Image 1 (cartoon, rainbow, N blue to C red):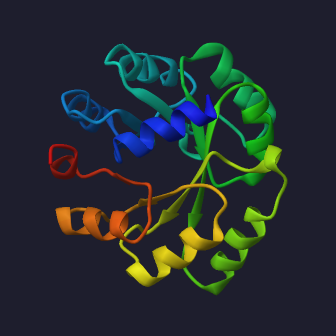
Image 2: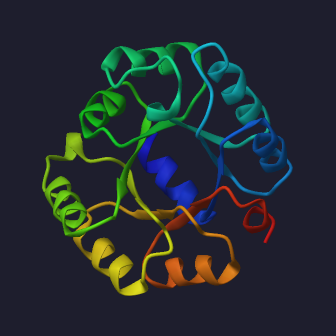
Amino acid sequence: MGREFVEAIEAAPIVAAVKDDAGLEMCLKSDVDAVFILYGDICTIADIVARVKDAGKIAMVHMDLINGLSPRDISLEFIRKYTRADGIITTKSNLITHAKEIGLATVLRHFVLDSMALINIERQSHTGRESQPDMIEILPGIIIPKMIKKICAMSRVPVICGGLIQEKEDVLNALASGAAAISTTSSEVWFM
């Protein structure tokens, strides 16, 4: 699933990130091909994923934001067995290897707040192939182009810029700086 996921994201580089039912309704009407699901719980996640999949879109579940799931392999097994999700998003690098083993696409999310974040991104890029996510997502996505270029150069996998992207200019800056895609909760961007 990993390679197909990356190719789909690179072909349609605007990803809808949804944090509630209203956002889900809106994104299902858009032309975006992929949806980052940033809400739900163990009782609702299968239904949320089903709605995304029934709309013909890629469904990526943010493991850290689903109430009732813990950062353990058993939670990945739950997502694989009880939902139709294509993959996961997480800030927990320990989940990447097992997610890939069971056929889930993976996005490792990094918050770029200081130089330690850059060290962590670089360190992660030197892990073995089995521990490499399919893509990384850096937040906030509106960081200066120079920093996006630096991160793209150090990462062995494609980079998604997410967070605070609200205008066409933000999208164009991120893509021109080397990002493979952007993710945003802004419905205005989904319909550009």
